[in-house]
Length: 331
Image 1 (tube, rainbow, N blue to C red):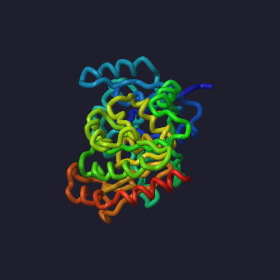
Image 2: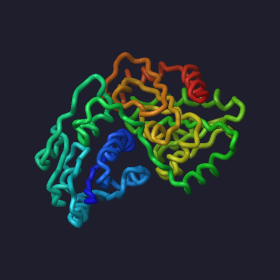
Image 3: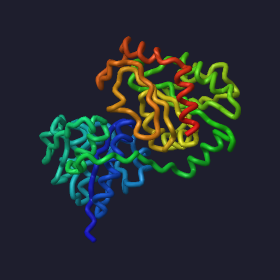
């Protein structure tokens, strides 16, 4: 069998990466005679290494030097085609310099002049979710097929470490992710997260684990204040793969519209997702989830610190979120 080598230039953020996974899964199912290599920034390498349909992860180092290093690596292989998901020149240039003859990307891309094939997004009421963008690029003739949920496979070593950090076979761990890299316009108030965590921690065999990046450690600490020993703050103390293992161990995860929300969905954990004015029909979790939103304004473009978006999030009471957690944990 003649194995075709396909390169996919992946997104730069965890959430965007997870939302691209269903399309890649469908692509591999329909093209079994190929191998898939992902070209991504170093911070995204671990995410794609956990995806079962990716055969190889190549890294795009920072800076101009990194572009030439990646291009030199690409020239060592004969590629059938390259699919460029990011809409940037930086994502497209290594593919062009790497000598890949067939370069496929979006017609709206800033690097479109470096592409050989330019794809327009397919419009339709059933294709609003961002996940369909990757499908339009990888399988433009697939029609109105339903997307499968994203999936990643957590390394066993991280599973064992997650069990050590979150012990107890009978313990119901609830994951709390109060951060969102987009800023205040996507963050439910820390006081609301604290009130919710306090109410949940009163239940038998229930404990709280707060998670996020190092920049969110103080935020998580403020939520955990006074909840010890019923809450543990692991923000900033995990690798991406360990974070995925911890999310997998949770009964339910409560989170903002964030990369952590999508990572929790990818490991199959039920999610209660809190939205302000961003549109869950576009960036909502692709898995078992209940989305809570009170705003009638739903947009893809919200300022990082929108007062209206913050008010919309603050209007979601902790009691409503608590009831959603109870519903999701009983399913």
